[in-house]
Image (cartoon, rainbow, N blue to C red; front, side, top):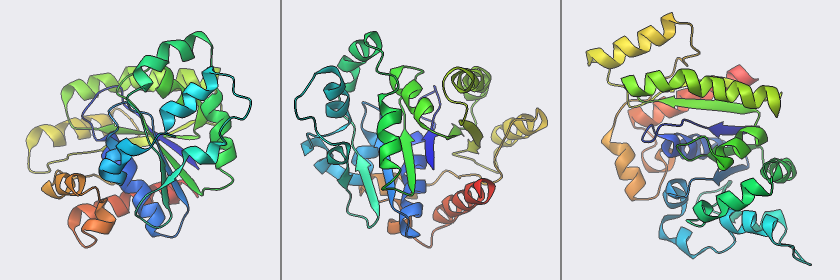
Length: 258
């Protein structure tokens, strides 16, 4: 299973959802890999802390290798690094992704990630891809490389309006490049059940027939604390309500994909 977490809007919780679902997968004994394609490196710091900055064989180095012929290129597994958590690995991001993008586009390297992940799928049970908040070379590469797409929604009217074009973009990738790609659903994130607007927005999405998942993720200070400690919730606050919500989301996705 290769799952991309994608939304063109920033601040919707892509990195948080990516890392916490991956951590739950690893905690359940599955060999799990996170690919961080966002130059902000949030997933990398969430799982590795400051150690992420010291890794040279990262996603940036992987894409750079695609541009420069090497007699003895690095094997794809050399770009994958263990995290402090059992069964959980990461291909960390790099700030160099921004400067590499134009060169990768002009030389049409859009399928290289797909080829790499097909190889890595032989070593990992589940692969999660975090993406930047834009429909660019990296998000397109991730959508082409994945068979499932998860869309975070942060209960904001701007986010709601962006959902329509977002789904259209995913379907275009599906039709033109990747017939295996499926939209798994919309993850309601930072949900406040006592507030009127979030409940109204979610109800309207459901009424329109959009694929809203049943498991909602609440707002919680525990999430920010887990970011600060570079420790996903299942390892940081196993018995907390917010952890249970992520567990429910993971189970809903697993059961739907079974």
